[in-house]
Amino acid sequence: MASVEMRNIVKKYGDGYPAVNDVSLDIADGEFMILVGPSGCGKSTLLRMVVGLEDITSGDMIIGGKRVNDLAPRERNLAMVFQNYALYPHLTVFENIAFPLRLQKVPDDEVRRRVNEAAEVLELKEHLERKPANLSGGQRQRVAMGRAIVRDAEVFLFDEPLSNLDAKLRGQMRTEIARLQRRLGITTIYVTHDQTEAMTLGDRVCVLRKGVVQQVASPRELYEQP
Ligand code: ADP
Ligand code: ADP
Image (cartoon, rainbow, N blue to C red):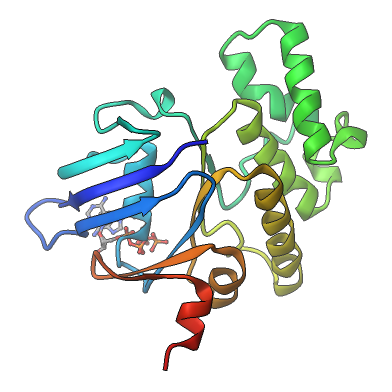
């Protein structure tokens, strides 16, 4: 687990108005932070700067007390969970979860141990030999999270993970994510424009507008506002 501290983060694309304009935000160890705001307010840009997929124009990005501005994505201990889950259709659940460990050439017996541990937490043990096509949407989401857990990621990042799903599945997934995050307690940054997700999932909600933090508050505080 790790805290995420953003100090006066600015991102300019070319000469235009900054996409992210002096954002400072502290996310505590184990906290679930929601980023909301209208399209174009800078949510994805901010997330990509946390992951290291986008250069920071100025400011400091500090993860687990360490400045990471100049670290490549693979040098940061983060896991991004994508909208479409990005599972490999031809691989079993086991191999999908094991994938990052295979890339790191982790020995077979350790891969087995760590994948089984992740599958235990995620209640996927009976499904390890199945292919993604034979899983429910909820199970697929858990496989995607398994791949994140297996490499001991310190921070989870979600970019609108549910926006392609129908309303029923979206409701189920919301419950799944809430349950898992409570259980794992991993620091999470979650981008959404869905009001319900923002109000039910987050410990706190950060409202962005035109690249600026407008407000950071608990869902309850936001709800009780006039
Ligand atoms: P979202 O609002 O869901 O983040 P966008 O449509 O804004 O999606 O962006 C989709 C992709 O296009 C992103 O990778 C983003 O970096 C890129 N993009 C967005 N706006 C511009 C732009 N003005 N010039 C170049 N690329 C852009
Ligand atoms: P959001 O995720 O909140 O929709 P983005 O971070 O995608 O917002 O975009 C913030 C602003 O930066 C927008 O004005 C968008 O057009 C611009 N932008 C995003 N990506 C790029 C890019 N690769 N090149 C130029 N402008 C971009």
